[in-house]
Length: 475
Image (cartoon, rainbow, N blue to C red; front, side):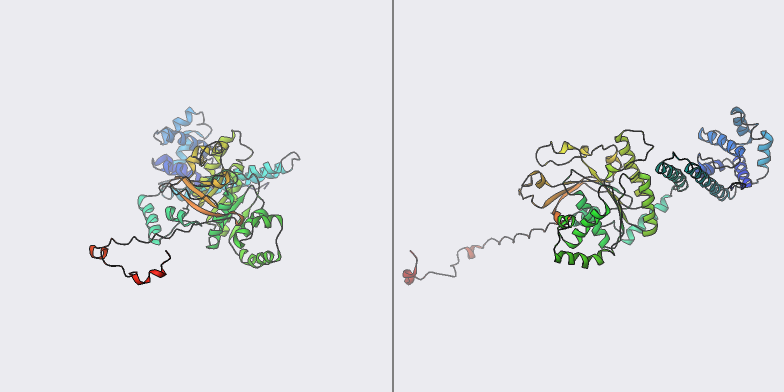
């Protein structure tokens, strides 16, 4: 506001600069917190810090004389008040104790000034009739998000701290977010925290159905989940979830062709369904920044344990992107992985495959190279799942030794799995109900009879035909 001095702490700024000049280890601790952000309110202090930062990056020694020389070469020595000003700063401090605490206070004041700056820019641009409101909001979000990322940079952990975290998980028996399919759970122990899982297939394979099957499995087990639906509206998505939950043909729900009994089932089960911890955001062409903000809000307010994105190629990187589509997809996949790691939850993102799959002979199994506009999806993902329904391509039998029928079945192939061996499994489908399920295992064949002993082999049979009964024989 006009007439108010921006928040700052001049004395603490001098203490930090002085500590760096008298203690060779202080600059490393200061740079770890501030990095290259212009955190100092006084321009003179910022110039001194910039000179020390450049010297630190070049592995040059830092003290009163070397910094004065560096400022002289940069033609900034007179600007900061000359050597006398540097000497005055060093005389105000006797040690670098509590340096981290001082840096954190100065850091807080910088964030406050940055927030004021963003708010002022937003106010001034709002008076301009030619300003696009979405670009205005997006620009403000990005600037605040950049400052937020700077604040939240994690410190390295010691081996002992990491081991404590690992053994805490092991001793608690904690597992990942469970899948609806036991074969996936057996191999992966569920979807793990911080993992990016890519579920990829050609259109018509049932990607969304499998995703919703996993959503319902999470929610019904009490685990809150969030869905970003870029392709379908929230009502369309809800209709498919109700089909899964109530086992009513999804086409009847979408076409509003329900009979009285089905309407009654929907109404009755709808009350139970409303209690499921599922949150939906159906904004089309959502940017990675918008997704991160909403996901962070869900995590903070609802403690969601998994996020689903339908689908990755419909996302954007914002209006500022100038790269080609492959570069954008690479940035999107990197951002999703970063969000999963930051929020410590698994993210499942659906992805379309290229048409190269359909030109392939045989079972038309997808490969990692089929990821459409793949960019670095394969590199960023912790798991890549391919979904195949041969029935869609009029292939009637699997290419295994049994030549079993493919009707109402699908193959889920984990072509990449960072923390376990890759595998594939056959599961059952009921797509009219948007359901995937485990196939019932065939009962084991009866054990073969033991070989007969010599005495048993020559024993007379229990039944002996009577020669007097010849008239009763058919021939």
